[in-house]
Image (cartoon, rainbow, N blue to C red):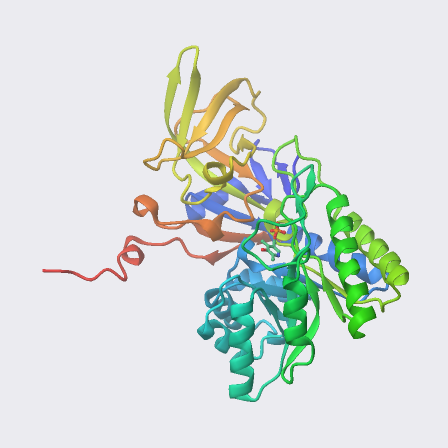
Length: 432
Ligand SMILES: *Cc1c(COP(=O)(O)O)cnc(C)c1O
């Protein structure tokens, strides 16, 4: 069976020791259910991984994967740092009492207002993305007479995908400074002797849903080529090297993720070697997992409704959610696996596709999955929906957003309420 779930005596799917059918009766559908113990295990795999190797590190949860007050409280309990990309994500972190000095701000178009908010609250680090931003930070630090730690985001020219990685000379990306031309160095020179901006090191993020360590190792080498050069020419020593996120998880049985510790080992090994080779000091290592912290910790529960059987073509069953709570299949052709939560002991002999209920032909959750004979009123559970599900959810067709429940030690707790129709029209004004 999958991470976090089991089957009980009634043939029901359980998660974190709680019967999913009881959860549906209590909270309705669609419903996101997170197994908090799994979130903790994922977080600890990274944190303990570095600790065991005696390496100073920060594991920053990329909160865009799933941001809510409860989630950030768990991240805080586990000693994680936090990545945020917007005022809204920062606001959520502040509401969760997340330690501000452990918050890192990202974004390729940070507004002056966002940077101001970050500085006012004393955000720990800003990951500088472009020249416009350097100007803004320069102005703000001088205006407020306030220093700030920054990392320089660079594109090392490596695109890592699930199973392959591509070495590109020039990276075609909206993020960061290109390391292969003069951009990164120009930015470095603008920052290195700045009175207020303290350049702590470099950042890169090479992709997502990565199943191998090679791409990360190549990125480390690229970064050290640059650090070696800057050390030699400008006596610069990086305190921090941030390798981003992208650690892959299992969505379907075709995915074979590495143990999270393996990424940690590979990174530490390579960074040690490179630091020796280039004769620079060993930096603190930061990583930014999002998906790998929450992805496999949640399932989504839906109620099954209509069914359409097209002989010799395909069967469709529809559920009471879809692209409004999980846009990844429509957006990226992402694959998921599902079971019928109230028929776990029934043989899977009915092939069907699973449709959402939005007015879009592309609103499909899963193509061609084998399930038990399924009828209206059954509960479908889709696995590994913890990352980029709720956080990407929308109000298309004016569907209220789903509820989110945390389970741990056999207990369940609502952490995001289901939206009401009143919520949907809250900001609507009449025009008469
Ligand atoms: C999206 C993102 C992450 C997290 O990616 P995951 O694939 O969820 O681990 C980390 N860092 C940066 C800069 C990102 O943009």
